[in-house]
Image (tube, rainbow, N blue to C red):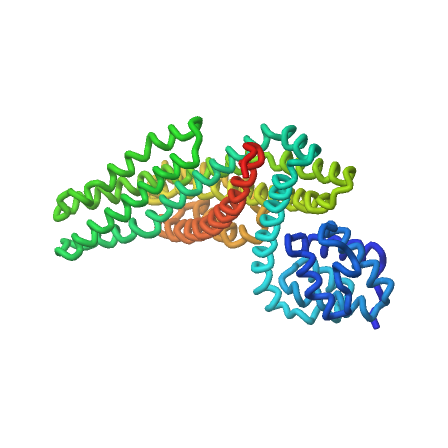
Length: 454
């Protein structure tokens, strides 16, 4: 029988369990695992429904140590199997219960890890929202009303930035839809020497879809962006409508009509998609997470002084909000570093096409020299994610700095490098957009808090 680990290892385990089950349904989720395994009922033997999860984890540790190694191993094994994608718990098991670690094969862990992270992200989001909902419901208490009043300006600012986040995300999605759906279809029609009647009808239908995207973008500006920033978006949206208008009424038997539309759309996308990404990142970084967390933690402290059972709810929600903010900050930093790399790739593209010209090669060498620092930054932020792009980049760099670089070899090496950078950046961009969309769900609850509605 394995011995119970030392106090340092137990403290680590306690922290891991507290984080893994720090969700609204955490008490029930934990109970569903441990009661069948060793007969411990969370609400009967360890806690109440309002107890902080870190206190539940500590109570479970104390109970299992008192019961001895048999129940300890049996219970932790059951928890481990129920959380096959939890990397911190797997690391702990490998160090302290290595025989039991094999209960979750490596392939299962790799498959379940992203699912676990997504469930954890969603659970933290739900927990944070539930904390603010509890604040809203308890504002009839003097101490809660006082804390809401103290943080009203910060709540208002958080709501404004969350609305901007939502607005820029909606704008980005509209343009991204054009980039991935309508524009490729138009590009395929461009390859035809002439269009038949059916193809003309299809292009007219594409105009309807593009007009719908433009309308969606305009509605997003009106619904989500405040006067301070909306004018910048209203200024360019008519250009989108004008760019697609020829598809409705233009002479489509003239190839130049379609070519001009595709050219204008590509120009708008190349200009505004990166710009909207930057604005989205700025809005995400401006959300005052620390102040929102302070509001919840101050409310928790005062709830404890008042003898209110809401102390645990507020404190767990504050801790979840801290993690949400830290995760978003990290994703924003990774996204920014990848976007710098993506912009450099766009800048090099034209010079690669004319690489037979010595001036073009000097321009490439100058841009490439500045990329070394970006690779180093990304290696710190996203060490696994940068490996393939960095390796292909080094191949391109070696080709570029050869005594007599071959333009065709240079173009091939650059194409491989650029393809991987764009693929990887697309995944990073998508992950950040999904995180921002989830974070934006906080906005309605925060608005009700500072406006005083129900």
